[in-house]
Length: 209
Image 1: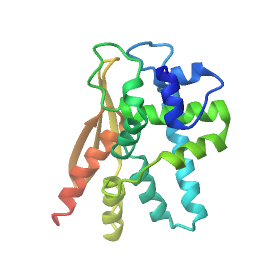
Image 2: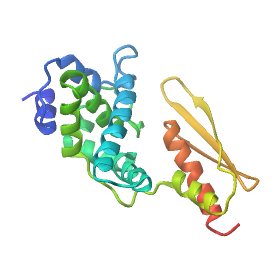
Image 3: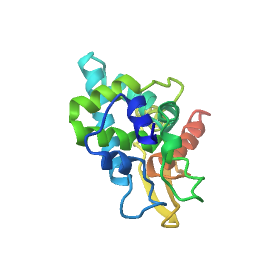
């Protein structure tokens, strides 16, 4: 059985267009023109919609929906799901590309988008809701900072981002200022860097500063 067949079996979906599956598993380090970056972006939006729709239909509040998205769609939550499906071992990448921590959770987002393009929204929804695993301990520091400031009737934080590193290994840096003090975070993408900055700000605010 080929790697592609193993992935289809673990995902519970057979692709009509095998090139979509291949693209979802191909990193830019292997091919700059044919890779999963655009699928990853689409998949991120799709998963946000699918999870929000599910809990909206269950009459969840805005805060509950936000919490569920964090529990189910953070990198910490998606990484073990990708590993369980075997996506980490099926990635097509450059031999020296071993430090991309975002690649494994991103593969799940890309596969979701590929299923959507190949079989429609119902197929993508079925795949996502049958494979996603909530991780309740994944803390949403961005929301927690916002809630603390709102409770104290303080201005909401503004996050500023910069891009550094190299084309092959970009590094995103985000800064945020609360109560006159700046905090920064870095990561392989904007969301990860923003979370790190928010975590530092939350720890500062939680000390009662």
